[in-house]
Image 1 (spheres, rainbow, N blue to C red):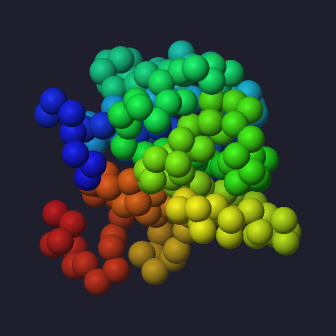
Image 2 (image 1 turned 135 degrees about the horizontal axis):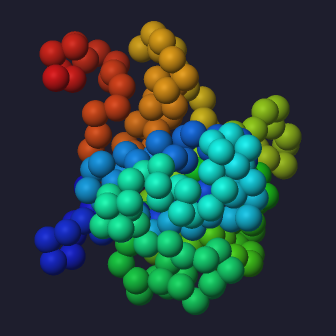
Length: 208
């Protein structure tokens, strides 16, 4: 886990963009809060369309209500994606790493190109230049050569490309089990402790 400032863990930047996978984003936000991590949250306009379509969430207040107002107020700071002067846009601001979940191919392409047209893209650029964890969770199929080339470019630059590809060896019984599988892998890559799902080789006693 990233070393804290003044005894509290550093914030994790979470961006929600317009690829399918809204339930992953909501569960990830909930899990970060459950782990006691501050979250700097940003949702793109297409991210809101996604949350409306897949999770029936239309506004930040609706998302706050889903998470729980008290937990939200304690842990979540919201940033406008158009504000490229916000704290996540600066390398001098201390934060632990960034997750884009779900990550649209447009966002992935823009970060790969370093275009920094929005706060999401700029924060991704900062994560790369500052050598901080950057986890991108695309959900697209099939993948074109352009998609694959952008993913390779980002991987070479230091990002982790973690497609939303749940496994089945844990014998999922519900959609929530598949969601937790992906969210658990994301949390692992930003150093956040969790108890989501069954790790390969663990016995039931290990999870207790």
